[in-house]
Length: 447
Image: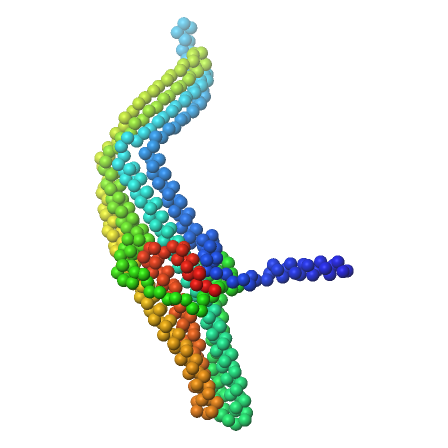
């Protein structure tokens, strides 16, 4: 019996260790490493890049020699009526012949302008896929950071909501006590109760928001996290370097990865015009072949062997294709204009994103400074209002309003600090200079 109890205790401890959620805090860098392994969007981009690179080899193979060999074995049966001159009579006959053939053919393209331009297009498509993949990697950095700080913001919202609810509950209890001794009217009790009920509803919404933000983070990494490392209480807020937004825009014009991909798209569209027009051009090929045939004629009892070697220079000259080639050229010209417009759209978007992030950093810095002072002022105002309520110069409504103002200021301050970090990452993403090192530096700001 004692052994059974020991076994049950050990099993229970094992099960507890298995099912107990991890209590250790997970930081931003650790989550990013998991995202690199598990994010389906990035993994799809990576496999797409590899597939595009394979197409380069496929296009290059069109310019290389093509060697093929055929081995044929044939058994030929025939029957009929023959005529014998010496005997002056007809006679039936059946024969069975065999034929073995070995054929080897080698084809080498000498001139095919369409194939060469097609290879150039494939190489540009590989470059474009590479730019798109790098853009996805930068986007992943921002996505992970946004999801991470959204969870922290939601956790802050829940914490502040819970603290506000607790503070209002205390005010409600004090209000009930004062009403019972006749110091205040029943309307104050009803007001406090209504505010408390609203605080409970707000707290439920805050919990739901936190659950949703955690699910958004899990969507990227396929992992749930019990707790995330919070941001340090104080860290230096720096303006962007360089301090001139035009310098950032100039960098974005050169390095923004989405814009770079659209530039390559334009080059590809331009080459596509050439590759379609090249269908008018002749192409020249050299074909070498060797054929060895062995034939056995059982009727005549004769074995024959035939060997044939040839070297052919083949010129293919397109003359008329029903207008298809001209239509393809016009189509490619329209697609080129489309690519030009898409490139202009990407340029304007890059400029907008750069300015937006740059101004967002400056606004976040100003907001943090203002909200820090607002929090201090709101705390002092709440204390003064509570003191006034105690002596009868302020109402319970004033106290509840001051309480809400304080916790709103605290929550807005936390959000402004997160926005500062995210705008810093987004500015570098828009400029095309965002790297993993930038995320490491953000991770160092966590506790």
